[in-house]
Length: 272
Image (cartoon, rainbow, N blue to C red):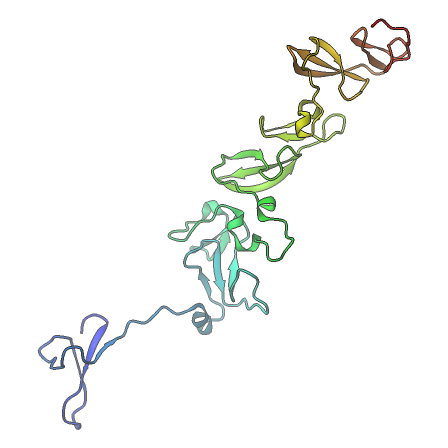
């Protein structure tokens, strides 16, 4: 008999046992449309498979980071999950070769969807209200090259992210500068940068040189132990005086405090 469809033939006389024959064969004397039975079975559900083997590990049919573990029985099924459903820790994926979660760059997902963004993983979604958004905790690295990048939700802050093969690897913080002050990560240079070279618009301490003379100028923030270098109305550098010296606004250079003019020095009679 061919295929998964057969036709059961019942003889007219009750004493004769029913016969099976192929559809449209010489023995098929049934009226068309009578007695056609399909024997194709639907695939077993996860529950049915787990009923047959409580230790079974079953790959998820469409998502590469998911699988079903029949030995996992939730008392309360987590939000976004189902009974027996387990998810690999981001950014790992489930391997159908080892039947374990493995490093993403060693797994062949086949036809299963390979999720690159951490926010595509169910466990990283917010299960309750007032949760820190996933995009803050696990920012996306999709379409970003390998290396360091500004944190998209924390621009002009001390924080930056590390990406590898379009996956978020970690969030890092800029080290303090030589004076122990916080540095910010610049989206423009993609470098940790001293506050003196971050504009005031972005919470930095860069001096504004607009309208100022070229050369040394008093610090905008009243810091007497340093001065700003300007050139053509643009800030170029911040220079710190030697220990014990302050910036003299009249002489436009660093001097001992007793010889420098007020407000940074003690000398009161100064030329303007």
